[in-house]
Length: 382
Picture 1 (cartoon, rainbow, N blue to C red):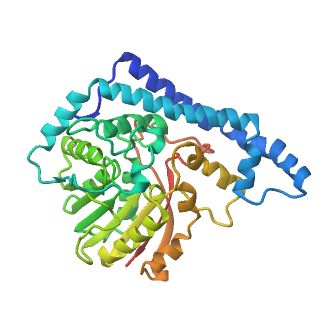
Picture 2: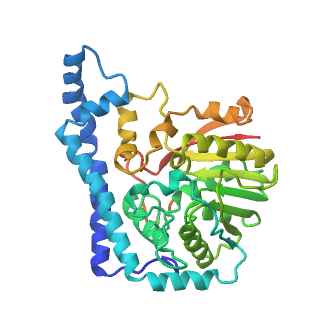
Picture 3: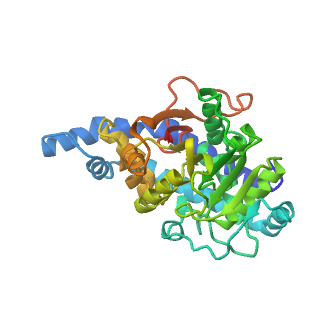
């Protein structure tokens, strides 16, 4: 916990524990049955009707949507998201005034929180209740509101079953460890994190490079208020939380050594992502690092069933740009944004958590597609 984390009562804890364990059960026990149903029932039936196997994830989805096992798993998974939002939101609203006061006290007088009440939200944020979260990341119910972020902070642990660690920052810790390990001589002085949310993933990077100036950007004021207060309470003070649109930031050309995102690009539109990538190229110094963490792209060599099951969030978890983002040839996008082809890379990263609390997963662990703490990272050196 940290100083602005919502306090849970007995029944609230019980609800969260139930949902966390239900998520784990769905991922490890019920989820694998989808592939079994596909191989033993759905695909043979499709083959009998069409004289061939499904060739696209769209064909797999249409066929699987009629299978009772998939229907039950999908309905339960959607319901866990709705219940998780309901449980978190009721807990946060019960103590909203206290949470807002705590955050305001930690934020007061700090130049490292910069909000812009005139900022116009992009449609791809304002038009969607992401992850079934009422009002998404940005809605403010009262003055100095932090409710959206407090709900998200508490609920992320439930959604991932603790796979991101005690502070749900295993993604950022993985990025920091990867860069430290593979590029030990890289010493960035200025780091930019786009789509930071409440800062789960930027704080481990800031902690790994304490002498760097870190700027964390998001469009949602509740996330930034809470994220800044959270950072202050955790003693990480080299991060400036800035409310701005990543498509047009106004920073000087070649003014950052490292620009990165973590699970952000799939929540932008295709046109916005193109503008963001060009803006990154403009702001990145020669010799600088661009690093993006996402789920794997849908490449021609990825099995169509794998594409279908990874696409679940696009149709059932209010992630309308998920499919489009993962269809894009990101290497082509980076090259068109200005990066040299031979500077591009793609790697895998796994969440880094406290193993004294969260033991290593057993060999052969079943991946919870789209939510597992294993990511595909891509980027470039300029």
